[in-house]
Image (cartoon, rainbow, N blue to C red; front, side):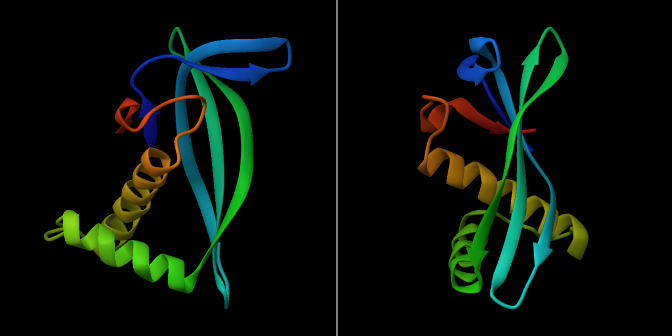
Length: 114
């Protein structure tokens, strides 16, 4: 979904390593109070994808609605199917959240959609 443009430091079982970091949201669960996203981080070295970690992140419906309104104000989704639109919105939200709250010692300019 998103990838760092330069190698970043991350903790591995055998110490700190450096790699391109890729973040995916392979699934999510919708509930009465919001959506829980399954977020997985991977290290990419020599075209080999290695799992780093995963976590579940919850967003309330209020948070989702606010984020959706903002995303729709800066991106155009015309011509896409409902499925394509929603999937792309998740990618844009992940990119926006990662740029707003940088991880792995990165900064906002080091992340791109994939």
